[in-house]
Length: 80
Image 1 (cartoon, one colour):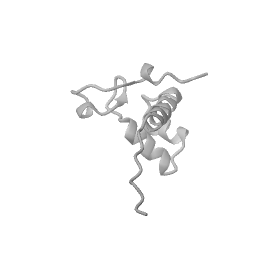
Image 2 (image 1 turned 90 degrees about the vertical axis):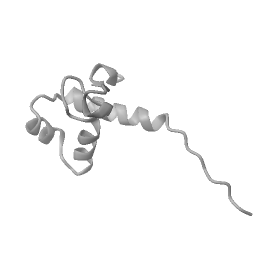
Image 3 (image 1 turned 45 degrees about the vertical axis):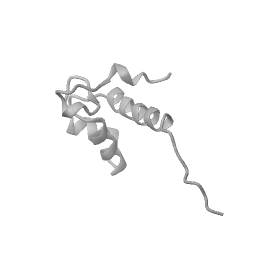
Image 4 (image 1 turned 90 degrees about the horizontal axis):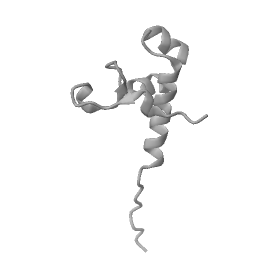
């Protein structure tokens, strides 16, 4: 099943200066991704942030994947 991250993530100018966050919280997508990259597990995050569910965490990963997938990459010209 494809995760629809928009069900779980929103950006509001009044919350975290508009950075993407879990709906109804002040937990930023960047925080979740950072914690996972530092080796924390989903169980660790659920214990530390009881308002989160596993679906919230998966939505953060889906958001990151979509953001990277749609990123435009420009390569500098190679001098000959």
